[in-house]
Amino acid sequence: MAVTITLWTLLSFLSGSLMFSYWLGLIAKHNLRSHGDGNPGALNLWRTAGYGYGLTGIALDFAKGYVPLLWIVHTDAISGYPLILPSAAALLGHVFSPFLRGKGGKAIATTFGVWSALTAFKAALAYAVILAILLAVTRLLLKDKRITPRIDALQVVLGMLLLTVYIAVSGSYSRAILLFGIINLLLLMFTHRLELRQLLASNQTDQHH
Image (cartoon, rainbow, N blue to C red; front, side, top):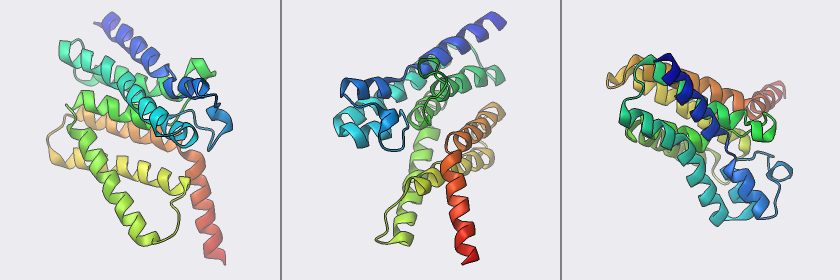
């Protein structure tokens, strides 16, 4: 069993580390590291190379989290708490991709892929609904102001926090899934740490004026 867990964890990490959006950017003659926010992910690809490349990047980044976990769940190769390891590994592969010398992306699309496989799309759909509601509320509050990357980061992290709370109180998910939710939350806080720090700093500055 330990060999199976180790093998699938490594395979999930390898799958997650495939930087499809970054490579698509190079095909489009754009180095995503030098454009937008410098993130080698699908959203920056969309903004830099257009929706065609962006949608392709989203699909591939989703698939690299979805496919290995779907196979694990479908074959019942791993279950319970050990399932957390390959689940987290897919995200860590994207965040610390060896193909980019350990400097990967923010793992949003891959997060959706992993949750879709683990919960038959249920938790992923809940996360999407939460993010849609947060976006609608943000637009209502900001009115005509532009939604900045800092606000985007806050929505992504707050959305995962709310999803984790939902999982905890719903009674429909195992404790292993809840624990993975907490891990995913911490990982998203890490990948969006710069924007969150900037947002906190700007709020502190506004309070002093």
